[in-house]
Amino acid sequence: MEQFSGTLGRYYNEIEPSVRKSLFGVLQSDPALPPVFNRLYELRYVDGKNPENEVDLFLWHLVNLVQYHGAPGLLKRKTRKDILAIYRQMGLVPEAPYTEEEARILYWELRNAVRRYFGTLSAPSYGRKLFGTLSAKDDERVARMEEEAWKISYGNASKFDLQEESAPLCSAVDDEYRDYFHSESSLAERRPK
Image (cartoon, rainbow, N blue to C red):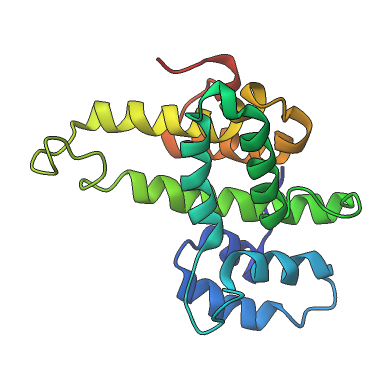
């Protein structure tokens, strides 16, 4: 999907929430942008209980989606329901179908969240072993990142029969995975070990 240019392109390339907030301030009054742009910002960065808190709820949801993949089979119905609730909180299950432009905005917002998630996972402190005293090797960290990317996208989609609802997330995770790791293969084509 073609990326945006100008300030909107910078907004979707930036992963630091404070910088995105200032770019959002410039963009939010742009009449050319559909209301879903503002709605996705609110869903991602506004803490409903305490609006003064600085949060990235999409990052939080991605972390939770990894954990849901490991849920036991006995809890499949409840887990599916919980995942759908997360999808609604991320704008993946809209009340009315998205227009092409709205779907494009959702796609790039999801890619941005996944890029931030990958940036978090690529930190040397990620995946430490032996009670946090040993760092994981680079190849171990990359393998774990790939596994988690598969779990939050195609893994949950297939395990919980959410292919339709997961399609925008799967597309964004897969494309960001390819760009981030300079990979020509798709996560859909493989299941990590």
